[in-house]
Length: 237
Image 1: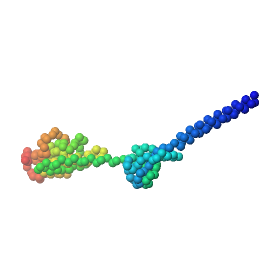
Image 2 (image 1 turned 90 degrees about the vertical axis):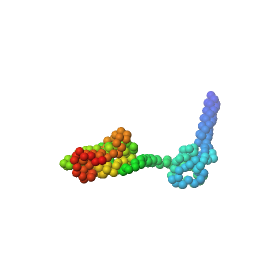
Image 3 (image 1 turned 90 degrees about the horizontal axis):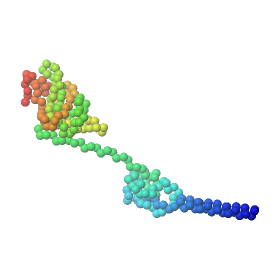
């Protein structure tokens, strides 16, 4: 009976040892597997963008810390070298960083040519009390301003009709900073004089109606432009 127990004990020990050897051999083969890693085929300078011609896969090899390396060139290409990387060196994750985000391209400011015989005026947003948000290059608008009549009373009148917007300058957040518009020489003077009395108002209108015309208006608005004194019913051509 004792002999039988000894035999069973020996068989169990041998089986356990054999199992241990199998597991150990499996772990050794897994951890020691030869892999290919990304390496530099030429010196890469700090700050340089890594291109596919600068890298390739190494020969199969064993590495103790493969998680710190790259095994696919596409994971490296497009990144930027954080430090100088010598030729034939394996590229570690600490040696590269993502590229800086590209700055948004500046929008090209559209500017229509000044029509023949017309002048261009520029109005800052701070000079306008009512700036239409939908205004854009090519729009037509009326310009309203405060004028003083012969009795000294102030009235808001349309001083320029159908002025075409030549350009619109916007801030990065889309807010309008200034606009430029085509007006006659008389209209330019009228706008300048009206600004001395306060802010202007802009009103969008249909295409081409009274294009850029100066509001050949009653004398009460003409007076501040030319300094002349005539009857209110007189209109200046």
